[in-house]
Image (tube, rainbow, N blue to C red; front, side):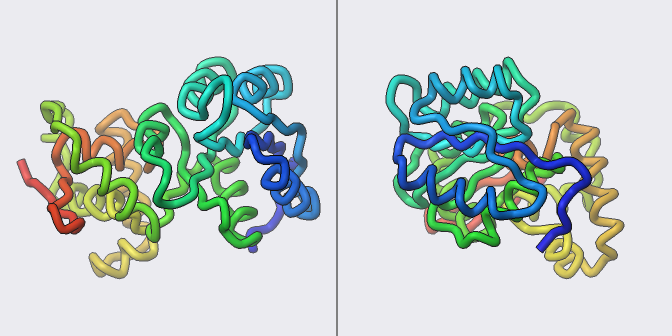
Length: 232
C-alpha cells in the first residue's frame, strides 16, 4: 500500500446507489490520509459539490439520474481542479470511452477490492492516470473498433520508433514496469519516453495518450479484440 501523502486526499463520491456510496465511504474514511468530503446521488449534485468543495478526486458513476456521469465529468473538469475517476460495472458501461475522452483520469470497477480503490484514489490524486489492464482491452478496444480514425496530427511524426513502441504499450494498458520488461529497458528510461510522448503530443496524461492512439488510428483493434500498431 502506498504511504499516505502529507496532505489528506479529499474525495467526493458520486453514485445513485446509497449502498455503493456508503461502502466506498467506509473504506476510504478508514484509510489514513484520505477524507471523504461529500456524497452525490446524481450528476447535478456531483457538479455542485465539486464546485463548492473542490475535492482532489471525484469517484464518478456513469449512469446517474438528472445528469449522467459523462456530462457531469465535463462540467466538473471545466469548473474545478478536481480529477475524475470513473466507476464502471465492467461490461455494461458503453460510455467509458467517452468519459475518458472528456478528460477523466481513468476508471475503476465498482466491485474492486478495497486496496485497489485506495490505490486508485491515491494514484489519481497524485496526478497519474489509472488504466487497469484487465479492463482496457475489453472496454477501450471494444469501443475503439467503432471509431473512424481521424487524421494523424503532424506531431505524431516527431515520435521516435521507441516512443511509438511505448505509446503502443500504453494503449494496451501496460504499466511502466511492464513496458520496461517487454522492451528490455530500465524503468527510468520508460518514464523518460512517456514524458516525451506526452510532451510531443501535448497530452495531459496516459489516459489521453490511450485515447489519442485509438482516435488517430496509430493503434487499432482487430475484430478478434487484439491490438495492432499502425506505423506511419
